[in-house]
Image (cartoon, rainbow, N blue to C red; front, side):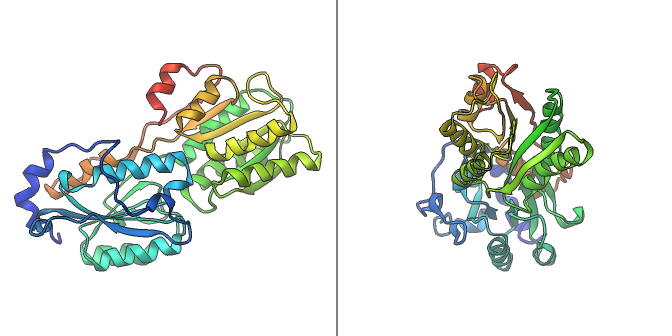
Length: 345
């Protein structure tokens, strides 16, 4: 395997270090304010003479401003893949799949040992994966899956997005409404999260005569756009009693439109509000009864990815090809403060 034999002297040291989920040094690159169309690639520079002993990784992620989930996910990756933990890391954040793919190609050409991908789209990565395989660069997926044969990546540490969607839809069905008139606010179209969370709801609406879409539109994870979508639905005069938003930020935008119109929501309200991700403030909204449901999407895959890389460097294959982060749904009738403190980020 390319470069990995040259890392043997540092393996013992690398295996003894433990990744952290939070804190750590942030690179002074301004990536927290990267516009979705631009992105940035930042290498964490190492002292002269030490880089040949470090594991080189390229990390392709989405814009940390996309959501609270993404901020936590990006922070965990940056605090884990550090010089102190045995890495020389280059980070690139962008919500545009074509830009991600171009940067990933460059990282492969730069001969990184590992390419870590949270793909903005599930498709379009075939050339990158083939080139990485030819170059000896091992690919590990995190956060999101893509459409590719399992032989093209070493491992995947991801959320089970279809399961998230099914758990949410099953909960909604259990509410026993006479009629479900749904405002469905979708995330970034073609992403693993959008496909999984949309798929389960689409199936239910197609199968049940009393399940209807009042509107189904993408807000591309944006809170302000979600508010506009709901305001337009309110202005249309069409009755609705469910808002199914595919992340918490969009759910918050939807609630702002409801509040402005004087429409009650949450426990004992006229409209059921549903969101996804791990934001502590959203957990608190469910706990206080302002929202009805939140599907947990765990953003902290970095320690597991770190462990897989250290095993691969030591010549040990992952026990599982695909590792799903533990997740569940929470509602306003059963959520506790202990849950908020445990799972909120």
